[in-house]
Each structure stands twice: as structure tokens, then as C-alpha cells.
Length: 413
Figure 1 (cartoon, rainbow, N blue to C red):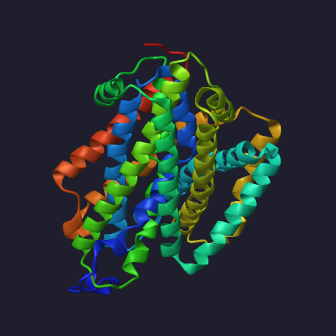
Figure 2 (figure 1 turned 135 degrees about the vertical axis):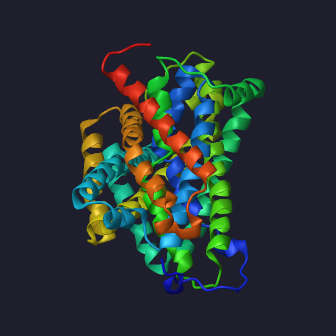
Figure 3 (figure 1 turned 30 degrees about the horizontal axis):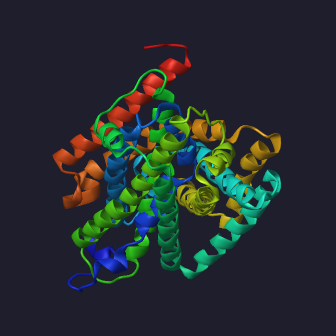
């Protein structure tokens, strides 16, 4: 690769703060309503047992997102563009179709969650809440015409808002911290919890975020501020650690709250709206309001970033561009159908995340292939220990998927 053609120059000095932001844009997808569905079910059905899944998923997410950022930094191309360039046309098209299906599942969960937030807060019928969600998301997408940086500031504020809401939830719930620590550090899973465990994995490590990170990081390159590849990659690592650990804490807080309030009281929660209603008599109106605000914020902005990821995938694989607004309009349809038919939202959220987990290897494997090759990455190709970690992560994901399919087909263990 000819580095002189890349938009980075050398020797200028710029602080890390000007480069933080892309991972926070990504992190919204790691605390989207799909996570809420699996986290609430995981906590209410199995207590603190699956907290270790969130820690493991977060570590894998940080590793994979930093590799995605590195690919975008060094090649100046997105993961989808690299797939189009280095794979055959049939393989590239198959990967595109799988990626689009995965994003449809993601978008369904995110859009549904935002509509639930409006429904819970303002008692608007779900279908009309979904239409309002579409209008608001169109409004957020309009602000992207002013650039990513302003939206990154908004999303950092969003993450802090969701975090504050769950500080309130945890304070009111009074969980058992000794049990929490034990289950974070000691893995435990059985045939009853494997479906939710894999769903939690799918909700945390998300295919569309790997495409999105490799795309949005390029806007840091276009700043032309003169940092080296190495320095920009270090900034991306710090950005990912800060943003994704914040998402991990919020996901863990959802499981902890669900355990302390629902599991401990022997309450089986079947929908997110039911979880909200149950919080009122158990913890009071403040807790239920915080829950609804966090859900609304999560759904609105994750739906927005999901649309951006879809655009990056379409452009990368097919070299075709459509309006963000048209894509958002098209991808609203499945969610509107689900809401109109009155299908149980928690089941849809959990199943959508399971599908994401099944699709994930088809995104991770190309990422490993590209970032491991010196002819693509030059001196920034993965070290042997990095390859070991990322291959182990991919192997674990595939193994859990095999267990899930075995159980779905009627097997037991």
C-alpha cells in the first residue's frame, strides 16, 4: 500500500480529545433495545448467573471494534469495501445479503424499543408511537448533514443520560454486590440458559457495528491533522475502551436491576412494558420513569446509527448509494408490521439478537483475514497474539451457535 496517498500527514501534534467519539457512536448499538430484551430476560429468569457473558462479550467487542477501526485507518476503506475488493463477486454478494439480514434484525429491535419508550412515557398507542419514532429518527438523520462530530457529542450525552438513569435504578434496587462479583468472574451456563446467553452475546457483539466503525473512523482521517497511523490507532483503542466499557456497565446494570427486582421476587417478565409496570409498585415512579427515558434514548439513537451502518454496507458491497431517508423508510416496514400485528416485543427482541449471533461469524472471519495480511495492512498487520485472541473469540462464538442450533433442533445436554 502506498502510504503517501493516504490522507494522514506526520509530525503535527493533536490531543486525544479531538479523536474521541467514533466508538461512542458505535457504543449506542451495544446498549440498544435488543440488549434490553436479552438482559431483562437473562436477569429475571436466571438472576446474576449470566453476568459473565456480558463481561466476555465486552472484551471480545473491544478487540473486534479496534480491529475494525485499524482496518479503516490503514486501508482508508470500510470492511464492506475490502470484502468487495478481495473476495469474489459471489462471495461478496452472499456476505452482503447476510449483513443486510442481520441489520434488519438489529433495526427491528432498535425501532421497536424506541416506540416502546414513547408508549411507556406518554401512553401513545404503539403503532402511532412507531410512526412518531420514524419522524424523530428522520430528524436526527437530518443533523448528520452538519458532520459526525456534533452528533458524537449528542451521543456521548445520551450515554451519560442512560448511565445516570441506571445509577438511579441500581440505587433503588439495592442488589447483592457479593453475588454480582462472583457471577461476573465465574462462568456458568446450562441447557435452560443457553438460548438467552447466546442472545446476550449477539446483542453485545453486533455485525453492523464492525462495518460502521471501519467507516466512521475515516472521518478522522479526513481531518488531515497530521497524526501517524500508530497514534491514531492508539486513540481508537482508548476511544473503544472508554465507550464500550460504559456500554458494558449499562448492560450489567440492566441485568442487576432485573435480578434484584424481578428474579428475587419470583416474577416472570414477558415484555419490556411489563417490566416498566412492575417497577412502579416495587421501586416507585422515579425508577419506572428513568427506565422509560433510558429506553427511549437507546432506541432512537441506535436506530439512527443502524441506518448509517446500512448505508456503509450498501455502498461498500455494491458501490451503490441511496438516500439515508429512503433507507430509513424502507427498514421501518418490518417493525411497523410487527407492532401492528401485536407480536410479543420481548420475544422478537430476543430472537432478533439470536439471529445476530448466528450471522456474526460471517463478519468476523473477513475482518480477521484482512487485518492479518501484511499485503493489506503492511506493518500494522495483526501480531500473532492478536490473531490468537481474535480466532479464539470467533471460535467461541461459533461453538455457542452450534450449541444453540442443537437445542433448537430438539437436542439436550
